[in-house]
Image (cartoon, rainbow, N blue to C red; front, top):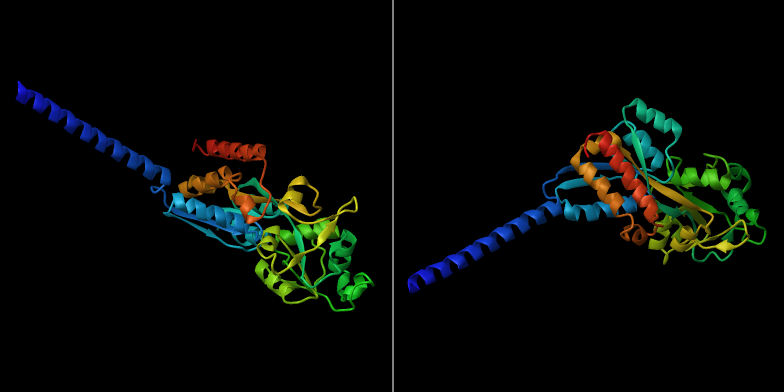
Length: 327
């Protein structure tokens, strides 16, 4: 009798140990699934230098969950990304600091690429000067047109020619090339004519090159995305921009969010619908859109989208996946 009780007790203990081991194994499997270790492949992204920091940060966080996926992100400028990579079908995603042009959309569709547009945040395009510049502290759109307009190549080469109270020193100008969405936005919204821009300036797709040039030259000026300025506030100074009400408004996440800042603009990613058939691309886009309100966009230095916009993005993705038979 006593021996049978001992046997039953031992069997109970063995059973409990076995159940515990099974539970641990199941938890481990679920953990691996959550980390996405079963997904591999590559996600190819090119495009806007302004959106680049957001996408790069999203890729870094995504790789913590999906370490077998390679996300390659190139900063080529919005137009350069569309023209050289996305439209020919060489990339899955194009970062863009402006909406896709109708001509780009038509060309993409000719090549079998169907772009899906997702709004991922807002930027406050920032005009920067050297910290020693104590004259161009608040600029009107008229000032900016005088400096950057296509006619300025011949007539405006010195600060005093913009405003006689400013120093009689030669201006040195730095900005993005015509392949950039930042260039497109600036020419359309500031100069008033898409593509209209003086030619005698130093054009580059490297925003850090603009930062470095302005930081070392008291007579320099440039323009770029807010995130690059916020990252380098100790090296350069942001000029305030005069609003329609005549107020001088400083670029910031807060003034971009409120709409006070005159040079606030939307930021996008464009996804090749066909690329969503690839598990790595599908999961990355889903992760990207789900984390637009996680603090990543704000940490980079941009204005996040609203909750409603986030839901609209996810709904659009879901509809695309249903069309492809993936949901």
